[in-house]
Length: 131
Image 1 (cartoon, rainbow, N blue to C red):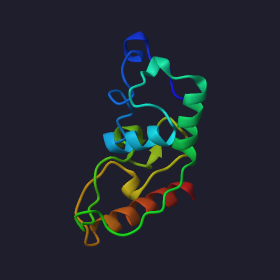
Image 2 (image 1 turned 135 degrees about the vertical axis):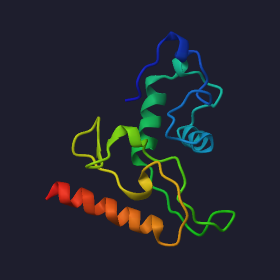
Image 3 (image 1 turned 60 degrees about the vertical axis):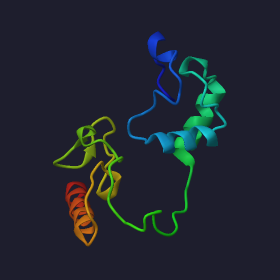
Image 4 (image 1 turned 90 degrees about the vertical axis):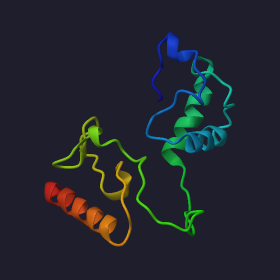
């Protein structure tokens, strides 16, 4: 369930106040998928709106094909905030038993094996913690 905002934030538009782990473009896509007007304010969301948005956030599956529009493959920011995980174990601070690695995290860098090595190294850390 999406948390309820105080009265000040409840007056803000969905397009202006959204989880910082999303880009504006991705957030717009997600709200469109949930059939919620971008001109709607947080305080105007019905329980049905919130449930649709939660279903999209937790259940959508996307097929990624091809390269980016600039034909570049870069690890880019926008993943899980590093402050929200234990960097020693890669476990989420708020959700025990949930681990993140690789490009799911808010990291950026160039390709050429560096991001693959980072992902493998992080996976090894998580595996060692779970064993």
